[in-house]
Every structure is written in C-alpha cells, then in structure tokens.
Image (cartoon, rainbow, N blue to C red; front, side, top):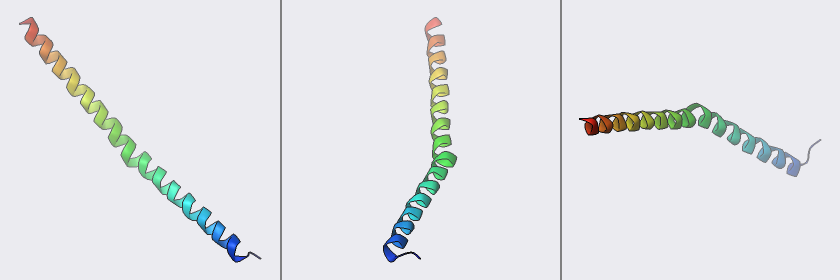
Length: 59
C-alpha cells in the first residue's frame, strides 16, 4: 500500500503539523495575552506618571 519513504514523509508532515498546531495554540493562549496585558499595564503606568508630572508642574 505505502512504501517506507512515503510513510516517513507522512510521518514528518504529521509531526511538523502537530508541532505547528501546538505552538500556535500556546502562542494564542499564553504569549499574546501576556504581551497585550503587559503593554496595557505599561501604558497605564506611563499615563499615571504623566498625569502626576503634570500636576507637579501646575503646583
């Protein structure tokens, strides 16, 4: 039915596909939300610091 080289090709294709699938799942569920949350937190801190500096200048 299948020869050995076809089986190895299919196996390599399946392994690479599964690695890609799990990598994308990991990136979309952990890395991207962590990245977005960190950037939002940093933006809020910068706005708070800018507001504090503006209040210090006005006084």
